[in-house]
Length: 231
Image 1 (tube, rainbow, N blue to C red):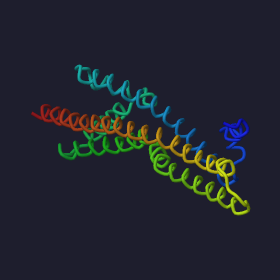
Image 2: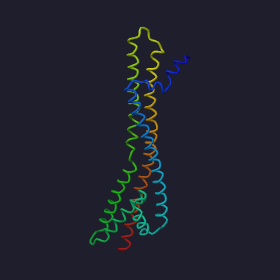
Image 3: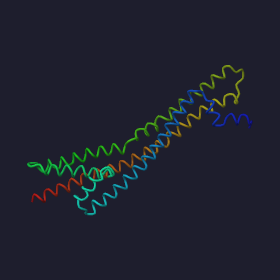
Image 4: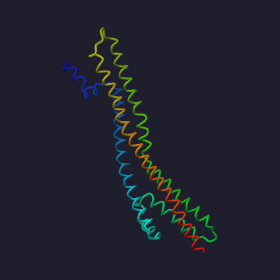
């Protein structure tokens, strides 16, 4: 192979000598890729912590601990508490307030407790799902952005042949190669984003199911507590 041709087709050389629109596409894809990796790692650590704290709280709760003691601990450490702990604290706090109001029926108390837990559950779920929409967007759009850069680069390469009497591979190869780099960068940005989105969506769904199950079971516990005291 001709050394000059090999040098001209080096990755760094092709990126520097690409047309301005293709360079802008590459820059956009590079920024999207870096930002998606940042969100991937942030979400990885956040979900690991959420799972660890949830496991710890469930062991404490179902281990027969005092609910009042657990509530006081969670209320004192609310900023550092886990998602399920904040749902528990919101529900138990509302339960205590409603119990102190005279004339309220059992159904009203339990429904109010469930609404308080459901509202907190939605806020916690929104926090867990933050940045997932960005990963989904990068995963779905990046290949098309890269394809746009490829189409533009190939178009420019073939337009350059119009002023050449005889076209050769050496003349068209650099333009096509720089165009294909945009497609490669689009895939490089999209694949990790899609994998991260699918993985984290699955993990969040599992946590959401556990939180919903806890809300129902905790509501039943409070309902039995009120019923037993009334008897």
